[in-house]
Image (cartoon, rainbow, N blue to C red):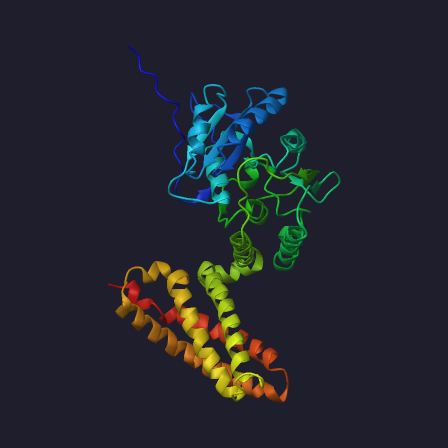
Length: 413
């Protein structure tokens, strides 16, 4: 009696997010090279995955039969999308499936898929049919004709969206404008840097250490890859027919985080940050926490100093507002910015010690803030503009001193 083993899942790679370049013997006897590897990152796409695989297979069989593979990378979906995909392998032998249990996130899922891919051309497409599969052959043709990167774009001839609301269109365009301000040399190379539908030559990204945040893997490819020639193909973004949308406010925060990380880790700023040993990831988190502190500071200052509220003196209002903001910032920094350090010494006693150290450093910064705020009254009459300038200057102080002194006690036994 023979036992039929189920089709095995791919092992999820770990370690750095770096795509290797093949050596002549890398593929092995039973793991031959193919022309094209298309990664389909999924999370809760049980209702869509079979249809996606079927349609992509029909399209690619017309053009490059036997020269491609589809790689589903599922982030351990609670609806067991990976299990449905695995059951399709007997019918679609070019399909490979990976189930990730230790990581999550669309961008890293794409890179992990590329790491196990056998193709000389790598690609990504959504698993919900919002990206029209028929555009795939045009993208593939563009790469075969010499492009290092072929991007499906909503903002060139033939492109667009179907039923997006005004708010979603506004947010999408706003995010693109923000990206052009922060990273003009990267985002300015394509009309649709937010696209998640593209193909890239393996050699153009091989060896680069990728560090994506959130969903916008194209930013990472443009920012860190060796991309010379780019082709854009228009496509119409369609609304999903099955499953639920993954678009949330968190994605926009991750997008900003990703832009700032690329800004400080590529180009001339990268030379500075590497030379100074600058912890860019921690700095970005510290800066985002600081933005929440600005909101707290401004709100408290308003309620304390406005004539129709408490009408307290400006300087006293500023001191109280600053202290409340310090407390807010400590909670977020302890739970997020320095979470990897704080986790080694838990409990209220240890947290109180960290807060006292953080507070002393920030109180010195607050004193500096108040001095700057008071001096600016002779130049700038508006209290809120004065406050923003004072906060910007003292943020530099707070970051550097906290970087060198705060939470250090938790790093040593």
